[in-house]
Length: 178
Image (cartoon, rainbow, N blue to C red; front, side, top):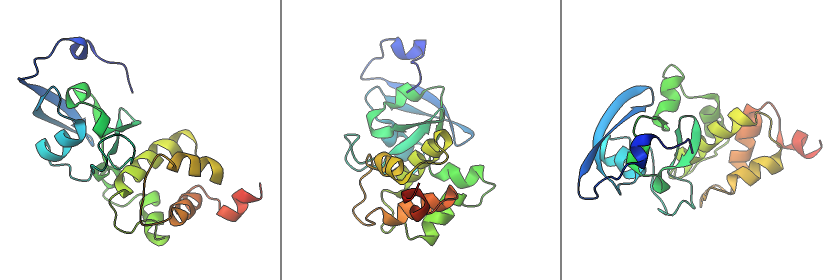
């Protein structure tokens, strides 16, 4: 996660709600949060960004993944006051940043049935957006290793892997034979 600002190193009173200003999916937004309010809850309940899901609340399932200043982070392990002054990107912002259309990754998820109930999908898409920005041509093994940080009880991951391989211009078969 990016370095803490001087404000975050200050002592914040637990019983006080503090002003939190962020850039949410490119739009300046603000709200108030107690010092222990999780970023996931702040996004959902204070700002109405319901695409960020809360699954395990322990950072294990990955459903709450957002990007803070471009880096994938578990929103259930981040306090809202830590996000003050930062850019937060959620799944709602993916299409917004793509002129209102689904991204190639989202379209590939649709084509390859890479989602079923959809609960985990937002977090997986946010992690993959970050990951593919750093590693645009992962092998299947690298991709499966990255996906191991996400729990999906519906898909079995095969559709997700096929979707990502399509977006990277490779097929699972090509990657296996490299």
